[in-house]
Length: 560
Image (cartoon, rainbow, N blue to C red; front, top):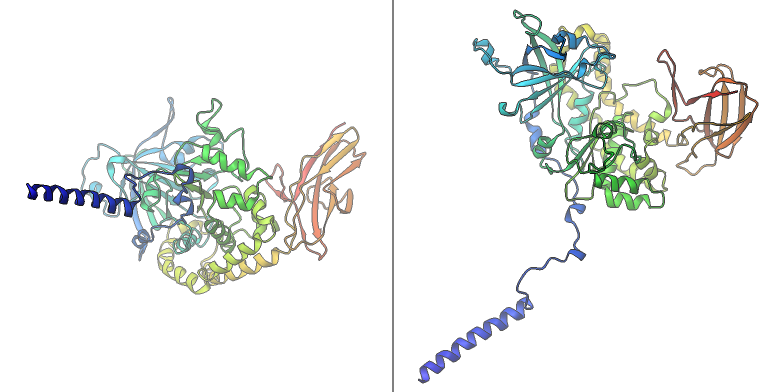
């Protein structure tokens, strides 16, 4: 009896003692509780990182060889069959550039066709790439492998970029090789490739024809995101004609009854999620002048990624980044947007004839986001600091090392047909430019600081006519040093301003009226100047019927 009582007492002590200890150390909580009100999204503190290991596979000692056999003629309509040569000869007024060809893709071994095995099915599609491929002397291509055929270097879409406008054939590859070693930004894989095409669509007895050297550039899509250890369910957009304006007529959510995907993609090509509300939220904030731009950057962007992208373009001297040639990426459950680079074939000083606002920091001025950020006092110093940080990476010695690693591969290929036929410079000039290339970054840096002294460019608005009066008005300029600004307005009847009809100097306002202009066609321009003799032309460009461009001017038609 006593033993039973002692046993019960001992069990009770263990039970209540254990409960007391649990309560004491846990506070009595018996389950996890999610505090939604105080939750802070950890993704919004994440800095973007790339998968550095994937670039190890792209080290080359010779160009890859790719063989493509075109079997089936594509159809433009029910009445017309097109050969592959019809596509190659495509002109800008023709619609054949969008026609894909069914092809058989092989790597350097060419095992199937060389062994005589009859191919019953194609395994890929081939089409021209580029916005106006008809204008290109040598074409670029895009190969898309069928799903069941596997991958080439873990890629399904193979972009073969000719880069024939770049006489050195290195600008894209050098830029992406540099991006691959920069922090806070992603890059794209690149390989040097020689392409051979057998065109059976025109002749059953065709042989493989050598199309020369190409730069293969990774295609940003869901597979790209997976390979780079990013969110494959993310939002991903390619800028087509996008300067961070709101674009309310085009950028709408897919559940909007007036949403038209084709119109949307004239601004931003959709490569990821098609739920656009997060994009719209960001754009509405960027275009709201009452919201502090620093708060917008903190909420919607990763500042280190943003500054890195801005600074890299300065060092690489890429003028084509205001409206295009970049991607926007945002993980599905994050509010942050990250910049990703794209297309550097016109960077590195390739375009020599250009206005001053296409150099240095002014290149960003026709972009709502960049202009708002950079015109705020103190922010240009942050960009300067990032430029100097990247300058430690992008230097003459490393540039030379990259170029030396390409030299033998590129020269072995471009000195042969067909590339030697279309090379826009002599081999001697090629050698000179190649050797001079490493010094280019130092020159870009010098121009960057020098051009910061200029006032920032303005946009000329459409003049308004009230009877015999014409009201001219334009944006207000910004001087990054805080100098006083004035505006000179000139009117001419010829776009080169070889003769000036009217000139008004030292305007302090951003508008002025002119009376009694006779009916007819005129051209006008505004030059901004500061107290120290620095000046800047407007952002406007007039192109005449012959394709000649005149920078900084706008056409005016005066009515009766």
